[in-house]
Image 1 (cartoon, one colour):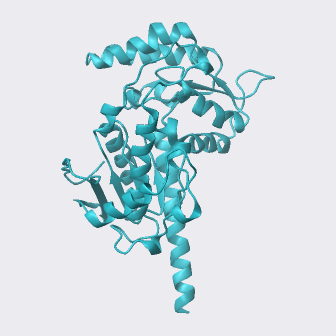
Image 2 (cartoon, one colour; image 1 turned 180 degrees about the vertical axis):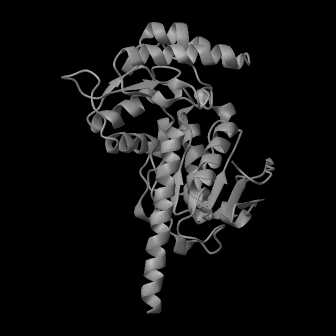
Image 3 (cartoon, helix red, strand yellow; image 1 turned 135 degrees about the vertical axis):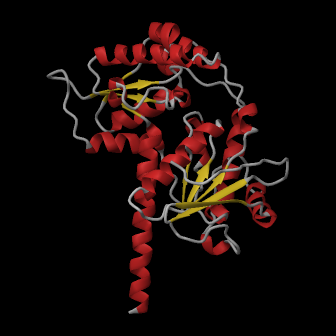
Length: 333
């Protein structure tokens, strides 16, 4: 859990709000900093690139090009805030707690969060008909918004970028184009952990089956489907009836603040997938965060992609820190 109080404010200025943190000896220090010079540099990179074109090598940003980075450690993590501020804070809590639970310092990070992006996401849920479905949004505006934040974080000194939001991941390929640092993919993190778990098929003669539960059978489900199939897993998605009569009503119950009703419907949706001989169920929707109690037996059958992303982010940061320390020790010897 986060030990310190947290205050975040957002202002209608011309540069994105920045939230950075460094945890030392279980004491968390936060600061919000608006740096116009960095914002102007970030915007100048985008001005010279058309949204429909690929980034050239000259558009890439390196740490040496940043005269005054917000955070200087090489293992600084840049976080593009999700559509929901709550989801962003959930990821931050996981990142801080998992990286400092053994008494070590938390990894340094900087967050660029813009609640206005949720107003740009006019989501129109398509018919639940599987792979052919698409999210209909103001595509160009969203990609431009997210890409601008990515460049800003690069300029702020981030050594890698993460985007802890299921909806935003629909555009990760385009947002990550031209990125000069690693851009960690939530789907890859989940698929990698499942591969390392060496799961055995529940039914003899079949592949390991993984259930993916999302709020609609759109490209969000396809995002995980591709990653898992590349690792040799068979992906099981909710059928049309389950989506229409269980999953969608669960989301509607949450919107009415009927958490208990939503929780019961989620349990039913998970059971439907488990009956189809899946080893586990990926809860690939921001709405499902924390809905099941940790002591719920079904909770143990589920995977939260935010956990997988946080764990892999910490691995990256800690390995990068070791490499930098090793390199520094060689220079001193």
